[in-house]
Image (cartoon, rainbow, N blue to C red; front, side, top):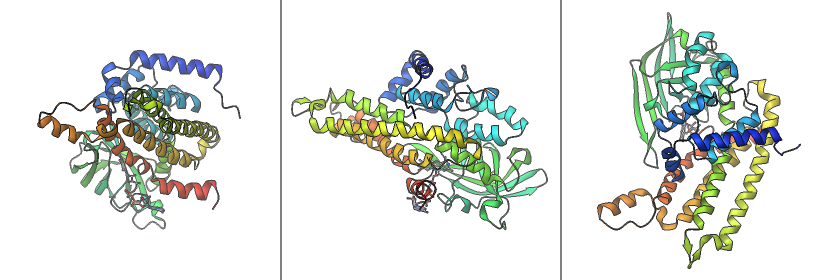
Amino acid sequence: MDLRFSAEELAFRDELRAFIRDKLPTDIRDRMRLGYSAEKEDTIRWQRVLNERHWAAYMWPKEWGGPGWSPIQRMIFLEENQLANAPDMQVFNITMIGPVLIQFGTDEQKKRFLPRAANLDDWWCQGFSEPGAGSDLAALKTAAKRVGDEYVVNGQKIWTSTAHMADWCFCLVRTDPNAPKRQMGITFLLIDMKTPGITVRPIISIDGTHHLNEVFFDDVKVPVAMRVGEENKGWDVAKYLLGNERTGIARVGKSKERIRTAIEKSHEVMQNGRPLIEDPTFRQRIAQFEVDIKALDITNLRVISAHDKNKDSGKPDPLTSVLKIKGTELLQSTTEMVMDVGGPLSMPDWAAELQALSNEPELGPAWPAETTRGYLMLRAASIYGGTNEIMKNIVAKAVLGF
Ligand SMILES: Cc1cc2nc3c(=O)[nH]c(=O)nc-3n(C[C@H](O)[C@H](O)[C@H](O)COP(=O)(O)OP(=O)(O)OC[C@H]3O[C@@H](n4cnc5c(N)ncnc54)[C@H](O)[C@@H]3O)c2cc1C
């Protein structure tokens, strides 16, 4: 297998790189370089710039407003976007509900929702997990009872990212509690977050931000026209969605960006009177990361070529689990390295707030503390999208055959 990019792929990468360099608003780039997460408004602004070129919905076909790119082009796009410190595309809109509607939606659903999802006129969230139904998702209990042309939904979701800012939620609900297999009694619904009976309660994460929520449904009425696929066949839709969720989850570009930042900052940070970059142990650590990243790059290309062959199977490709494990481990450890470069300044920023209150002079730049915020948030990367333990089970069973 030839792992080098072709001349056309290199030209494509250069075109993207120049576009992102010229069009990414400087204020967004500067904040993200410091380690801040993208705000909702940042994501909307950037996604709309890309959508003018039909690049925002990077994995959709041209017919529905995407660019119709090959898997390699998509990989290059994600990496360039991450390397440039640009906000990621809104994942629930672009990699989850968009492809699901293209595959399973009615014509009416496609026409109504797809253009708005690509342009971020609607912000979607994912209502899958429940207390007692995370890794074992088929245990979900939120009930939907059909009454005429509506479903009446009652129950609770948890860990619903960005539900507090969402316009719509795609949800898995139980429509047949007596199905012979739990997976056979589940339906996929699109729920307008403004519907009476929905309560969203915040869960504050370890990094101090409000990203996660509990969502309660109390006699929430959902038109039958908002069902995707057939009643009790929602598990097929969910499996297809999870396969897409794990593609691109390695975020190799982000890990590369973290290494680049560590190297850049290690020229400024002094250790024993010399720049940290001159420390042989530090250089060895960087070299090891570069080897790991190269290996991940190669694995990514292998998965992409295999995924191309399996793409119509409707199931998550088990090989994407390898990427999820290694990609998230690297994302966590490269971020930890940037924190280490920051040294004591990587104390969480509540320390900086205390310092400001006591009128002490500033200790140093803000980037190390912001990196720590990112580090804390990234503890979750090995949990969301399927925990790494579950991914290891999948690899053992489906890839290694144990
Ligand atoms: C930051 C963040 C954002 C999230 N966003 C969303 C969202 O937007 N929408 C949504 O629906 N969900 C979301 N989730 C939920 C996420 O999908 C679940 O947390 C995840 O599936 C794990 O489920 P759980 O938390 O119930 O843990 P559990 O399933 O209870 O697992 C607890 C521990 O046991 C381990 N474990 C469980 N079963 C096995 C097994 N069979 N073999 C080995 N180990 C096992 C797990 O790996 C884990 O370490 C989010 C989670 C996080 C942390």
